Length: 294
Image (cartoon, one colour):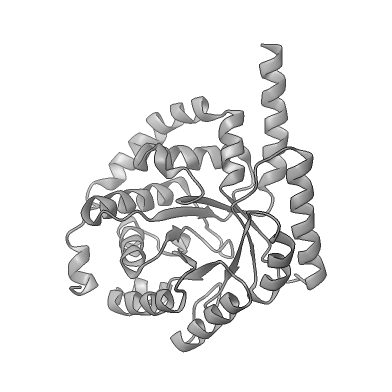
């Protein structure tokens, strides 16, 4: 493969800002209203990475978190979520509770949430999480290197992590709220895709600015162009501040608008959330009542 810097020059994000504003203000806003259905809220549930990444997490709290998830799914007759996401030390706990379901166990690893350590330490943590039973790894891109435009360092770091995560799903967190501009988000998306990410993900949820419609649109456009050039499909995960059903549907609509309906499956679309499910349950009930009255 040619140097990643040269590869990036074959892609184009010029004039993307104008298209984003037009689409988000007009086209997407109309499509969101049409997409606000029980079917799509259930789809959002099936694409959810149900997440607990609290400083105060304990073995007991994760047991309760995982058990409560299964109770909610059964009580409200919801589809299984895609995954449960925890810190590495709680992977075995979550995996044991999920073993009788189709719900996968994911872990944040590689010095989450900053990635500010040696690559060897990142690799060791990823391997240990996988050994504990993690089927998916969420890792953070080297934001400092990105901002300095040291794209080869970013690529090499991610490629090494990809090699350490053979056989598991790898999601690369771009931390878009720290990248500031369209070009950097666009390039970060492409570098992660070329390094072998199965998904690119907006945010850790640990910084002031997390997922935004604009950043998600840029990521989708990068993935659209990447697939057109390489034939490879990379998924997208939205995380950080997605607590309302309306917000989830808006992001789903952006993905559908840019990448197409086929992207909206758990294999290529995820929503990372801790509190979204309660609002989805509430909104499904409200929509069902409206449908009955109609």
